[in-house]
Amino acid sequence: MQTNDPAYNPLDDIDKVLVDEATIRARLKELGAEINQTYEGRDLAVIAIINGAIIFVADLIRELNIPLQLDSVRISSYKDDTKPVQAPEVIDKIRLDLKGIDVLIIDDILDSGATLANVTKMFQEMEPASLRTCVLLDKKTTRSVDFEADFVGFRIPDEFVVGYGLDFAERYRQLPCIGVLRPELQNPPEWS
Ligand code: IMP
Ligand code: MG
Image (cartoon, rainbow, N blue to C red; front, side, top):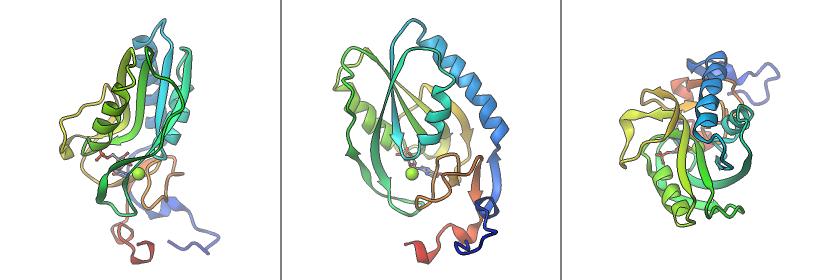
């Protein structure tokens, strides 16, 4: 990465694109239709797990034609590495009262399952009418907790991915596609 290089393009740091922009857009239309159908005639509370879900949620809710309220929760489970360094921790709580309403929790990626398992348990205590989860990506092979999402964008292999909201050390969230970083960038000493 050359931060002082005017020709720098974050896409150049990508080794391999797993899901391109057009494929994401097309899948979001399908997911949106699925969610619209599930909640037809209902009033929904969408809870985004930020920062990772920011871009996904921003695009997905514009496919929804049901009445909805949006809030977000900030959870930390990764520091600036590709390995989890601590148990999921709630850093910022939501403001909405979820009692008696339909809740859809949206995250960027389902990996070990620890984040969503914890977050759903926490929101279940607020007694919502229903509680479902939606993830853009599902790494099927890496679960340490028994957890499945109700709505899944793409199932991907067990590789560390960035882009479309997903980060490495808070970088690369702005990429329009989802890809794998070049190997030499996956652990740069200057970022740790
Ligand atoms: P889990 O708790 O292991 O399921 O992990 C969920 C969280 O880990 C996600 O919300 C992401 O922030 C992060 N994460 C897991 N895999 C990746 C990845 O491949 N790229 C970027 N972030 C990831
Ligand atoms: Mg993250």
